[in-house]
Image (cartoon, rainbow, N blue to C red; front, top):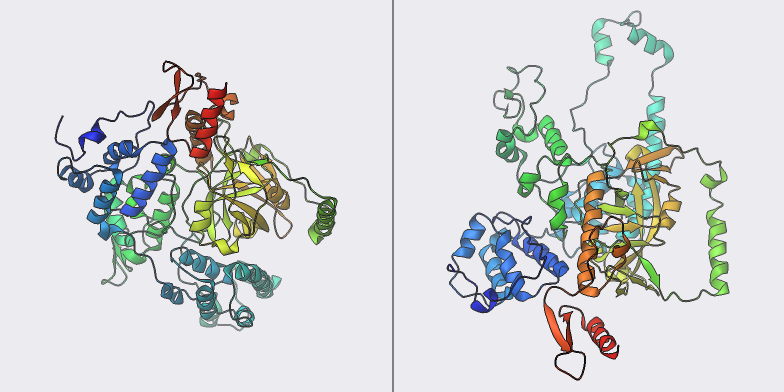
Length: 601
């Protein structure tokens, strides 16, 4: 055996059967060590392994300077995982991402001519990167940066607003602003005769050529084709230098005059003069397109992710390639979740509660949208957007929830409630003070009882800007390990007036303006999440006994249930020869009743 930093007590422990080594996780010393350590521990918690196995698995995730550092540690100096964690963070402490100060929000101001909706999107994205942000500071900075006079006056009527209140009020002003913009645009439309003259290349009588040119529509500075861009860890020019040799991005369209322009401004991407590489819109668009298509999966260190965004490390790297997905607006990254949500020990509802529900339903059914005949929704061959696949993937979408863009949302018609998992709740900057109590528990992965943290109401919207549907939705906050971020239940699906075609992976719905909108499911993410869910079910069965996944036709192997992993031996009779094993990583509240039940039988 070669020289190793591990103590002999760690090396003598055998790895559990079917242990999934984290070979897909890589840390080379250029990323945030705290994020890597957090993701690694989350992965090991899913595996249900002890301290010694964590120690032996951790070096598998290291590469480059990081593995050289590990190999240089003194022989036998590591006795536990806490030893390696402290040494790892101390070595790469300069790479820990620095939290932004709330003062950064003062620099996020509404630009002249920028719609309030886009300004709020930018402001909300910046809020996600600031730790310890209070509602009072956020509302003050938002009011400071607003150019919409009516909206700003409304916010000054109250000293402190919560971000939830601001989002609700903002919707009214945004709708009014967008309607006013459409009306103003219609008033600027040229008359029929003017359009004919311009189309024929004619100009009105008595008008010189110079006068006609001076009144011609002026072109505005070029802007990017995307509404929002994924934040990068380095300047655009440096990112391009690192990926240019790989043929990413593709060759640009030629400049109109490659020899003209300011000779002091040179673009490496166009190989011409006139603007800087850092200011090249074609390059920014090409990079964003490459990121959305998964072509930069090997360069993930160039993409900056907001703090406190925990990724599902064991699947994310596999599913970035060739993604054909919808992008409502923004560039957030994914988080984690469970598959089946079942009510447990639901309390009987009183007659007064039923009357209250009936009253609420009668009020809801009297809305102006429902008073009209609902538009006709249909699916046809034109909706087929991908080749047939062997799997039957679930409907997984991206939607704006609260102040952020959330991916890996499972649209589940079998779930009654909306479920949001705690890591998503934290990443959105929400606080426990925003929660209301929830009287019922749920059964999570592994058939174990979960007590919700509470319930919160948040705005949720799906679709693009011109085909969007928004609603307020209640989310039950759970702490569990799954492959999704949010489970969207029947209540919100019905509020969207949505119809889901699971074969085509398309959800069509009635938009806010009464037209028909549609959103495609994220095919590759759905397949990956589905496979990860089955894997989690298997692991849960190993720790907690037979699970409902045994009835899933997609699970081919049906071995006899038996405990695996780190085992603990216990006697079940008066004789020493009568004994069995149980997984020693089971929680005490599950292990003790299980042992008593086995002994009693």
